[in-house]
Image (cartoon, rainbow, N blue to C red):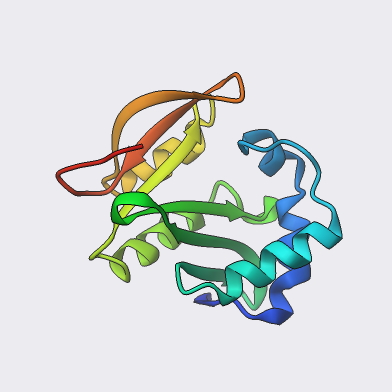
Length: 154
C-alpha cells in the first residue's frame, strides 16, 4: 500500500537517515555527511517555509522516501527526491514523482540530476520531464530537467 503525505516533525529522524545514505550523498550536489544539528535546523526551515512543499512516501506503512519542492527564482520549483535503499528499483520513485507533478501541475518543476545517475534520469523522463542542458556544479556534471513552461532560467 502506497501513501503520500505532507512531512511532519516526527519524520525528522527518517529523513536524516536517508539524507546520509551513501548513494544519496554520492548523487547530491553537497557530498558531505550531514550533522544532526544542521539537519534539525534545515528540517525545521523546510517544514515551516511557505516556499517549500515537503512530502513523505510510505510503502506498506514504512518510511520509503521523501521529496520537497522549493520555490526558486522566476517562479520555478526545484525538486529533491530520495527513495530508501530497500525500496529502490521497483517503480516507487516514478509513482512518487507522478503524484507530486499531478498535485503541482501549475508549477514549473526543475531537477538537477547527476549525469551518471541513470535511474533518476529515467524516473523523470517517464514523468515527461524534458532534458534541457548540462551544468557543471562542484566539478561534476548535472543534467537539468524541467516539466513545462516557456521560459526557464537556471
